[in-house]
Image 1 (cartoon, helix red, strand yellow):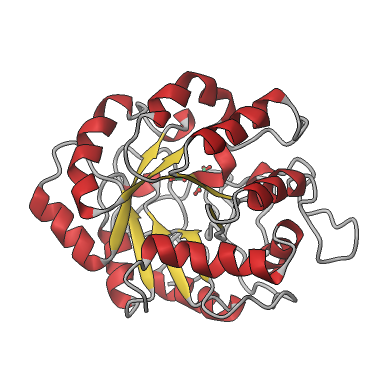
Image 2 (cartoon, helix red, strand yellow):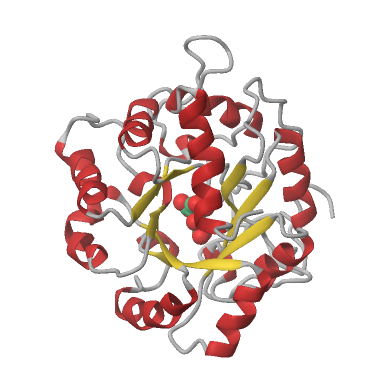
Length: 311
Ligand code: 0GY
């Protein structure tokens, strides 16, 4: 399979950018044992067909390609998150977990009729969480009505819930999310509008959500997706996405034990630019400014959540 192909007779969505082949070597040296806590695998479509209800068809991005990126950037482990283009068929993600030699854990998407046996199989493969997508462009229906039922099934396994939503929807969903009884991980800081003031009411609500709910964690990931400025380098060629920094840095500094970071490779649905993953790694020391914060963000926190049993 060549880079940028989509196999299995599927046609890649128009305007879809291929993931960046040949990422640069980061200048920032990741701490030993670092975890890329948000990334995906796509297909290959010929082996793991894309879901009929998908809102986009990506180019293939295989487990081998993900593991090559992991080694190139200097990560030790991955958390592979189920993406909507595979719906509730977790087989590509599970296959990647099984090939990882224990170096990947997963977050699945399941339907309300998932059985105990299916959950046990996912657990055995390395799944430790279930994802609910509230971003309206990505799903036919937001999963408000199925969430409670699914959470009742996964809670006994010690799994957590991953939620993806946009900042403008948090006021309506605040109470609903606050009632989830498990740990909750929010993708990409709840997608703040970074053209707004980090001290303004919209981001203040997100910070309040974290303050009032000690079981809520945040991924301070995806500057490339949130940035209005883009990868423009302002203070030296390896500093990019500066408009996102004040948001992410604030979350890291106030909640250093409840933050995670991931590349989001292979970066679905980006139409303006495709990030160089080496440059994304160099973004990390701008938001986690000391070795202690970096170790918590990249090693201790993800390991506590995904490898609580230790090595
Ligand atoms: C991400 C972001 C996006 C897509 C998905 O599951 C998905 O399809 O999460 C997006 O389009 O913002 O984290 O991969």
